[in-house]
Image 1 (cartoon, rainbow, N blue to C red):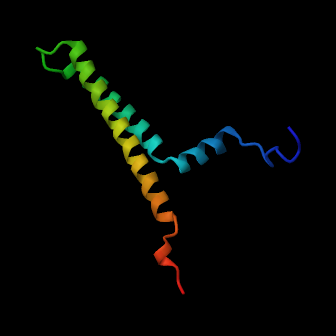
Image 2: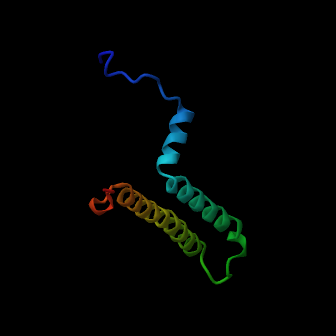
Image 3: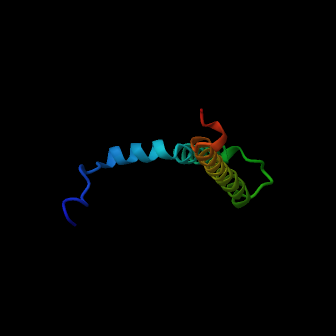
Length: 96
């Protein structure tokens, strides 16, 4: 790699993580929601209905947790599309 192609500074792990989180804010929100749903399911596992099998209870909370993560991904995609749409200059908006 020549000098012209090298980046001027090397990203540290922390700065790269913060930069990625600023670019895609819904990813950490989705991950947080997923882990909170899993923690809630684990905490309430002992209080499940007596006639519900453990595997069915775990499956329900897995689907719930995945729904939160996928929903946040869709919100992030929608946010990105809207941000890109509004950041483009519209031909009719030019001042004379």
